[in-house]
Length: 211
Ligand code: NAD
Image (cartoon, rainbow, N blue to C red; front, side, top):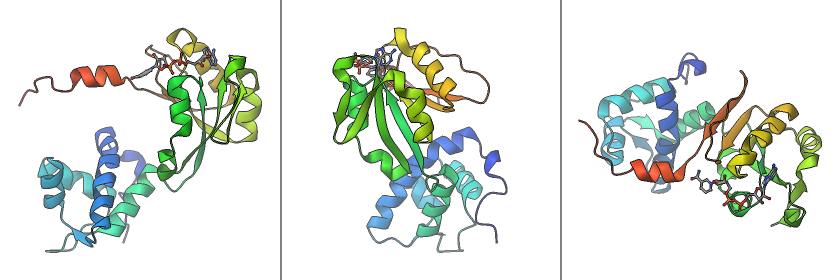
C-alpha cells in the first residue's frame, strides 16, 4: 500500500505549512511512549478542526487502523519524508550581524536535515568564525556555494543590501531563500523566497478573528 499521498507535489500549501506543527506535537507524544494516535485526539490537543486534521493526515499518510488510529512512528516518518527532512541540505547565512550570528549558532536546523555551514559578510570585522563555523567575506560567496553544494540561504542583511545579497545568491545557484530583511524581493521563476517578519507576526497575533 502507498504510504504517502499519490503525488507529493499535490499537497496544498496550507497543509504543508501545518506539517511542522504536527511534527512537533507528534514527536512530543512519541516521547511520552504513545504508539497509536487518532486524528480526533490530535485535533483536540492542537486546537484544530477535526475535519482539517483528518484531511491533512489523509494527504500525508496511509489511513489509520479502525479504533486504534495512526501508527505514530509511521506518521512521523511520512511527514518528515513529505517535508524532505531526510534529504539533507547545506545552507548559508548572508549577513553575520546580530540575527545572522544567532542563526549561525542555532543547532535546531539539524533536526530538519539542514546544515547551516557558513556565513558571509561584507564587513571585514565580521569575517572569522563562530562556534567553529566560518564567516567568509561576501566576495567568496559564489566559490563557497559551489564548493559546499549550498542549496538554501538565509538573508540577514539590512534591507538596503537585501536585493544585492539575494542576486548574489541566485547568481551562485541558490534556489531557496529565507529573507529576514523587511523589504520585498522579486525573484526569477524557479527561485523560492520566503520572507519572515517577526514584528508583523507579533502585531497580527491577538487581532480579532472572524468566525
Ligand atoms: P545587523 O546590522 O546586526 O547585521 C547586518 C549584517 O549584514 C552586518 O554584519 C553587515 O556588515 C552585513 N551586511 C551589510 N550589507 C551586506 C552585504 N551587502 N553583504 C553581506 N553582508 C552585509 O542587523 P540585524 O539586527 O542582525 O538584522 C539583520 C536584518 O534582519 C535586518 O534587515 C533587520 O531589519 C532584519 N530583522 C528582521 C527581523 C524579522 O522579524 N524579520 C527581526 C530582526 C531583524
